[in-house]
Length: 226
Image (cartoon, rainbow, N blue to C red):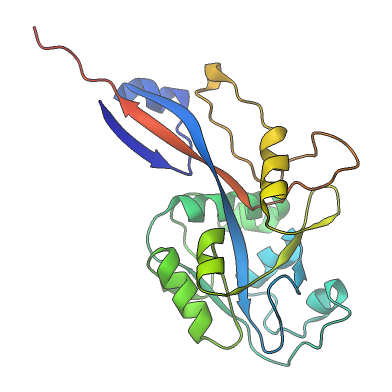
């Protein structure tokens, strides 16, 4: 047998075409990270429409009214925003653009979602490590990486506003809350994407909007030789 894994689930048609089995194995997290003077990890809050507008190039500076409204206690600089994205195809890009397509009709129409897209603006970098490195070296930068890279590189990750309108942090409890509400349907090849998940239990409001992804393992079944 041959194993592989990705954040992007395959459809039942694709699984059948290539003779694959698919099952969820690991919960991961994709988070926005910023390099803004005086902003510590978890200090900035963003929501989906604002994040999409930043990556569409419609919000050019950090002191834009849309960002200031979400962060009344922060002193935001009159500084140009430099967006950083993946230059290579990746499951991380799929998760990020899938989320933006759910919260922004304009993003869905202009860019859509896939493992690789035509980015409207910004700098491309290879791998999570490339995005993390570019954000760390670029004053005014913003990017998106797997949560482990944000921690390892001591980057300032942002909090996000989830589907219930609550501000949540990228922590194990919030990742778990998103997974708890997932519909694991074997008839669908376990093809579930945990972006913009509703709360499984009202009042908890811990589910992150874009953070959670499931690493889907695939097994190729070898046919016996006759």
